[in-house]
Amino acid sequence: MSQQKPLISHLLELRNKLLKAIGSVLIVFITMVYWANDIYHYIALPLMRSLPETGSMIATDVAAPFFAPFKLTLVLAFFIAIPYVLYQVWSFVAPGLYKHEKRLVFPLLASSTLLFYLGIAFAYYIVFPVVFGFFTSVVPDGVEVATDISSYLSFILKLFFAFGLAFEIPVAVVLLCWAGVTTPDELRQKRPYIVVGAFVVGMILTPPDIISQTMLAIPMLLLFEGGLIAARFYSKKEDEQEDEQENEKADD
Image (tube, rainbow, N blue to C red; front, side, top):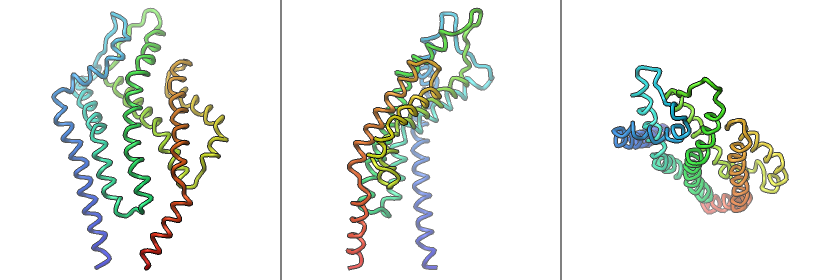
């Protein structure tokens, strides 16, 4: 019975953290849902500015004019609430971490949030105008551009997540080096392969033109170099020594 109490208390704490995280998303959503149509209009501006004078966006589903802005606002509410959600995750796992692990995890959580936001901003302000300008410039003669609002929403959400995750490269590099999977020196030796991989990812995530591929590949390479610099400050050997010292103090 005594062994079950800690487990139950952890489960109750986890439930409270989850409820707080979900509640924060709902609160942000409720405060923004009134402006759902305005938010969708703002997100659709990169495409609308690239459309010809006769082009427009359409809704092929009866409920699409309601659900598309509703879905976008809900996703945006989650994006805005990410810092608080990650804080709940941090407050749950922090008591069970060593000192050096706390020193690693907290900066990574903060930096990963910032990098995710930067990836989304980069996609919206830099990539979208180029991508939609390319798509609308290759329309065959006699074809009128009329993008469905639900299809557009699915497309931009995929790109938002793709660029947000792509900008997490420094965090991935630091974690790999800290876990002992690789070292900064080994990654530097593999730099030519990483350059090729960055352009392959850019080719997959962007239209088939060299400009948009380069616009994604270059930031990824710069972030990779930043991850190598940050990885120098985290050494697994030093962390293991700190663990041994903490365990010795606990035994004493």
